[in-house]
Amino acid sequence: MSIETLFATLEQAAEKPLESARAWKQAHGTRVVGSFPMHFPGELAHAAGALPVILQENHDPITVGHGMIYPFYCGYTRSVVDQVCKGDYDFLDAIMFGDHCVQVLGAADVVRAKLPGTRVHFYQLISSMSDPWSLGRARETFLNLKEGLEEMIGHTIDDEAIRASIKLFNRNRQLLRELYDLRRSGAAHISAKQMQLAVKSSMVMDKAAHNALLETLIGEIEARAATAPAGVRLYLSGHFCQAPKVGVLDMIESCGAIVVDDDLYHGQRFISTDVEEAGDPLDALAGWYLQRNLKVPCPTRVDQNADWDGYLLDAMKRSNAQGMVVLMAKFCEPHMYYYPLIKKAFEQRNVPHLLIETEHELTALEGLRTRVETFVEVVKRRSSTRRAAA
Ligand code: SF4
Image (tube, rainbow, N blue to C red; front, side, top):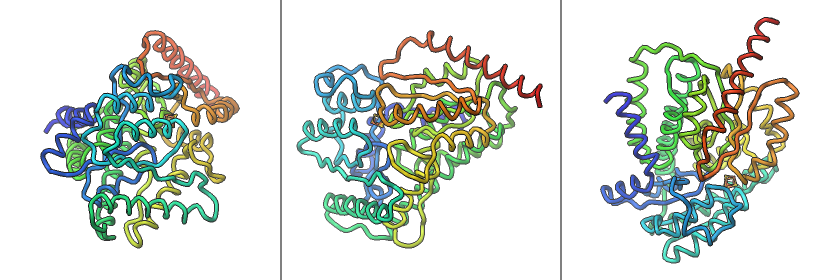
């Protein structure tokens, strides 16, 4: 299969996630468990024999959902509510999720009210990550989640099944990180859109099938000689629950920039941390939950040991990025609270960054293009001034 065909297959799942999950259910007779982003361990649903699917913002205009949720909620929650009101989630066997912000809880209430015949289970994940009891509380939540899944399938899930799922999911994260390495090093030209398709499709596809596609894709990419792409090296940060619109990613890269790394949820944040494969699997998942917040700090969690702005500055150095574009979903409170710290840290160190606020309703890209083009020019000039001074 060619690289283009492989990405087209990933795109089909990423852009039509519900269609793809419904087709998988019909073909394999598997239950489908929908979850909200960002901290739900799909491994447990997989070990229960179900297909875990992270529910995505879709591209449809919000219509019937308007009356069910505040218009000043983020695009992700408004889109999820709109989808449930339109009956898009009727085929799901369960929706299970952990909370991570007030808006996601508001959306969950509507989902529960609209799907009275579906298991909609909420699992309170501890948000304070560095207390002596954090690990134990996280384990308790995952035990509750396991019991909820066992109730759904009517039998217990044994530890071996969970370990096997952990192994499969780890392999998936490792393959995606290989793609990131290939892009970061310049050994392959993988656009921001393609990288997003690779990660987003992993959130909705069967992991074994996804791994097989990724293995072939990496083999094809390594076999094809690539010249390192030219352009201003940019780092993308932010955008939690929803994937940045592909049009925005393409626009950024059409302004003389190449995206070399990111901390997006539909990116590094999703694949940053593996789960311990030996020992008690619930301990391992609880450890993963705490560890991933140190690997890529999340503003929805409270951790005295995590420092998001410091992480971003280091990550930019590691990826040899020249500037950072912050993509902030409009009305995303956790992001809005933290952004001033990032702005201050970047300005103090004279590292260029640009804030772009995004909306569910894709606004005219041309105004944004002018800002990105100007930013790329600023980054170029600062880089050449630095080089001249060195
Ligand atoms: S974290 Fe941000 S994007 Fe995610 S549901 Fe909350 S407000 Fe929306």
